Amino acid sequence: MEKNIQDNINITSSNSLNIMQQIAKIGSWQYKIEENKIVWDDEIYTIFGIDKESDPILNIKDFLNCIHIDDGYKFFQNYTEHLKTKLPYRTVYRIKTPQNEIKYIEERCETIYDEENNPIITNGTFQDITEHQLTLLDLNQHKLHLAEQAKFSAMGEMISMIAHQWKQPLNVLSLNIASLEVMHMSGKYSKKELEYIIKNSSKTIEYMNKTIYDFSEFLKPSDKKDDTSVGVIFNQLDSLIEADIKKYNIDFNIDFNLDILSTIQINISKFTQVMINIIKNSIDEFKRQNIKIPYIKIKVKKIDNSYIITVKDNAGGMDEGLLNTIFEPYISTKGKNGTGLGMYISKLIVEGSFGGKIDVQNDEYGAVFNIKLPLVKNKSN
Image 1 (cartoon, rainbow, N blue to C red):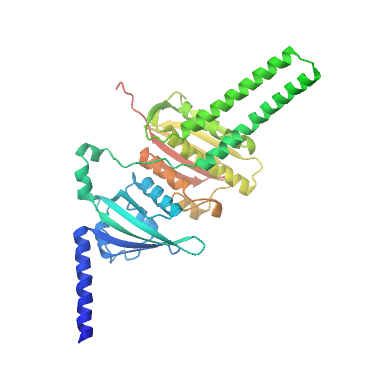
Image 2: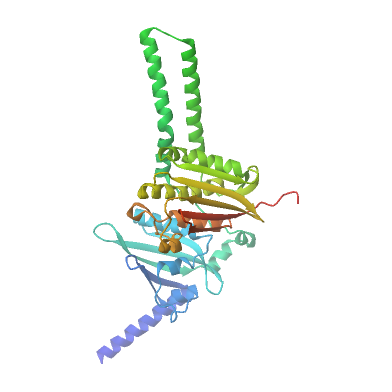
């Protein structure tokens, strides 16, 4: 008798909890990282508009496909930072249901780590805050995609690249100073030699100043899009990767099958980030495959109302399985040495921020990346 009473109390408590969750539009979830499996309670299936009977087991890819493409970068940045800091976090982003309904979701979570500090399980909640969120935004703000898109920062890599860029000019300045010291000790001064040293040193310092300027422009945290020329974009890219191109003796070629003054509306920093991700992947493969005569060929052309940018290398190409998954999170061409974020972030930038398209395939020599970006219409029309 007492057992039946207790069972009834448990059932009542469970039903009450379900009712409260439905009223608050809140549900709980668990992500088993090693198994790549997500467990949702019934309310989350309702929020996301997914039929539990037809899709009972979900993985991280299924979940990411629900996130609005303009908010994917923000979500991924927050979750990655959470795993680094091990602090609980709260974030808000949009999802798109199978019924094409846009909803605002508030997510909170905490992660459990094993003895070796590896994340194993993330527990959290989703709450549908669409009604509340829309009251905070007027109609115009809602239409302008107000989701914040932060720049994926790679400060460590940027500092490494600056070091590469400065290595040769620092050697030049060191040799110039040594030459002046020898001239001073010997008492023999040549006007011609002094003029050469001064001119050479000034040119070297100017180059170093330009390097710092280019990197500072690249690192500016801005989502602003500017009308700029194709030539300007690729000149900046060339200056950022120059050291690595020389270091690994890469045949690097950019073919403009159009007027280099042609205008495009784009965030230069984000576009440069995409190109560096692709080029760095090629360089890593050259080293891994020990390619003797490496090349990277970029071709820019205009077709109809789009720019088509093709990036080819001769690093041998990707495995078929990787070709199909390269733009998914945590998929790396570098094994344990890579984060698996570069191409995922690149896709978010090209397709989410620029409204373009990016894909990859193999040819007989290596990987071929294709980027399609929309043209800027003539403002006088």
